[in-house]
Length: 119
Image 1 (cartoon, rainbow, N blue to C red):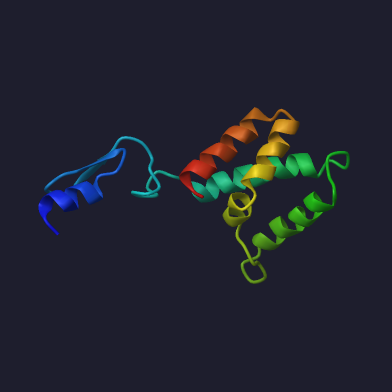
Image 2 (cartoon, rainbow, N blue to C red):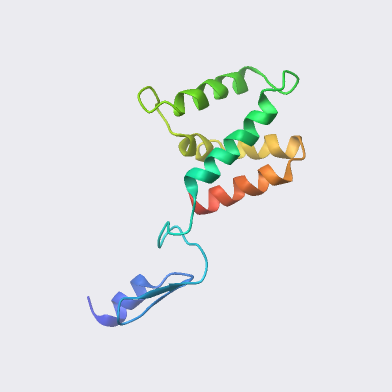
């Protein structure tokens, strides 16, 4: 591959490719590196916010009861089918609806951040 093709390929939105192979990241970009992105920590924060809503008997239903069981299972590495991040990424739309329904802007913001940086 010629230099110009390689430079075009390695150039992404917020990263400059330099001849010395150093890159300068201006903001987090999961397509370049997960450096500086706390996917696991943010996942745990978001799961806590989700549970805050769905553990309320007036806000839960059969779907959320099953989701609670999946969260519990995700915490056990020996019995889980999915980890917490996978649970979130697979259900962004319904989680977004949950946070919008209960006007939880902090939860919605964290969900959007996780979707952009980690999913």
